[in-house]
Image (spheres, helix red, strand yellow):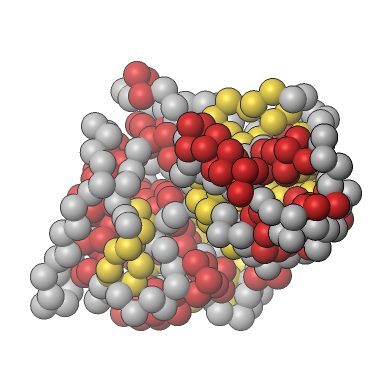
Length: 470
């Protein structure tokens, strides 16, 4: 084959975030690239991310923002081992640092990172921003969350598509890949071909990048087909589970507070005990079926894993007054109890503390009516009743029935295990096969982390797929 990179042909399966950037990286390195997408357009899921605003990355980066079933992400001491996720981010940074930039005569945006974790993960964010700047896309940030300057996910897709076309990538939308096979006897006209791709037509290529995504978001065309391709080449799939999704609650009364958004602390319990690491603060959203909002999305992964292990008695405990310490809360209770007069209703006890719908939900859970007058409470039990109602603001237990499933999930945990991949994203079982993005067993927190990983792993896979064997 020599060193003629144009003779390298790369097939990228899936035109999501990882697939599009993989195709760009491979084509920029000189490869002939075919990009397959079963949907009628590229980036369908990407265009919907962040409620259409596309939180592309985050300035607060740390390895603990990423999870894998093999638990490497939390062990920074293994930073030099290739199986560790830190090793993957090292490779991502090395790949991105060599990316060609400067296509547009605009300055690079240099955001100040919220944290420097001592590894390459922070550097990856800086390099991603620089890369997209070179494509003509610019950003702004809110509390570390990085968005396109126009707050438009569609703009990200448009920029990627323009870059793909400028590089001559053969974009084949509406072509569903049916089979990927080793090309044992490739045609003489395709030297170096190692794979046969069967879709609308048959193609022989030197390298393949699997970037088919996960089952999260089936209404956007997501499925688990990519895992079947990976299994065909000997890979083990850690069972994918919904992540970054809502939680359903086994309490019909909660509908009383449906539609309310409020600051809260949420902690997951199993068997009455706190699940390690499963505690988040932020804006809670109460829905008709349960709870949602960023803190709940962050916790849904833990619930999915507990359910996978068939654990029972899973619950969420809600603190509707997370900013109050215990001393302040006891003072509030004392004041509310002593200040309650006969004409006050039970609902009046909560005025100024929480949304009226939350107060109504708590009162009804205790079997009372909102309009019940304080004077109608038993004199010897009045303080105990009011105290018990107020205590529920700090300790409201919700039995968890399940998650919102893949239908409402933004991502999935599970996939092709990292120990079966090299840091270049190449398969350890099949030379020339690369697997990137959400297909792999690494998922991030809500806040741009999953797109960070998708773009980093995709770019790395595409770059090395183009150079593979040259």
